Image (tube, rainbow, N blue to C red):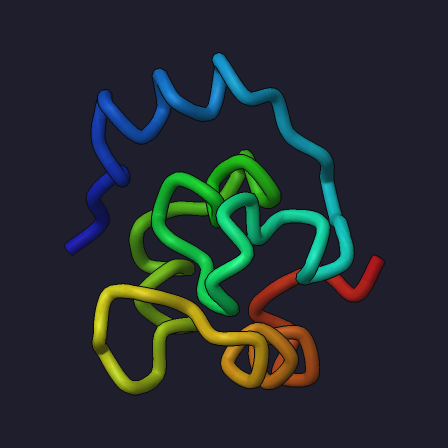
Length: 80
């Protein structure tokens, strides 16, 4: 079932702007070592909820730097 991340996340993305790809530290806006849905969509504006869930392999609702790297290696996220 394909769903979008939601209006609030998309509104936040529009407010923050986004890049097609950025280094993990550059998109981890709060510096906590994890990407929230808002940070993820800001970095990957074309991402769907399915993409976010595929990257969040431990299903904790956040994407760690390790999960991000694995998603890039698996081709889920762009490498550049």
